Length: 129
Image 1 (tube, rainbow, N blue to C red):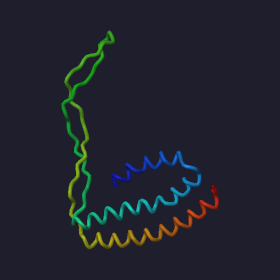
Image 2: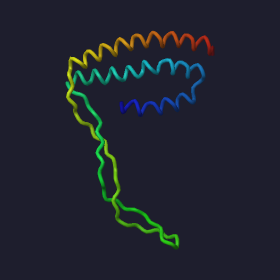
Image 3: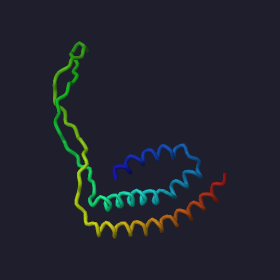
Image 4: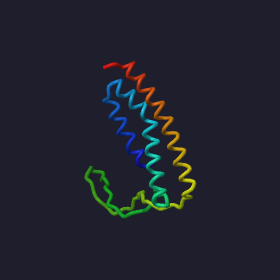
């Protein structure tokens, strides 16, 4: 999931530079790409025997803060700030359920691929180069 969040802004930037035909094709392939990511994650879970979850820890840390005097000069002082840290944590899974989930994802991917190919053909017809 986290990789998806990192990839989507990049896709948005690339889509801004794409021709109308490329943008149309990218839109058509988006669902297949998301399913591919889910399939990869599920296959990894099955091969490891557990899933990996991202957990956020909130901590108060010592820091150095800046302040401004009335005359406009700045000064430093010790302070505490709240920070959020991500960590990976193993999570128990039912491997049989993960295999069923993988089969479902692969089935959905096949259907999404057929739809994407039909949509891509429409993109090519609508936006000839």
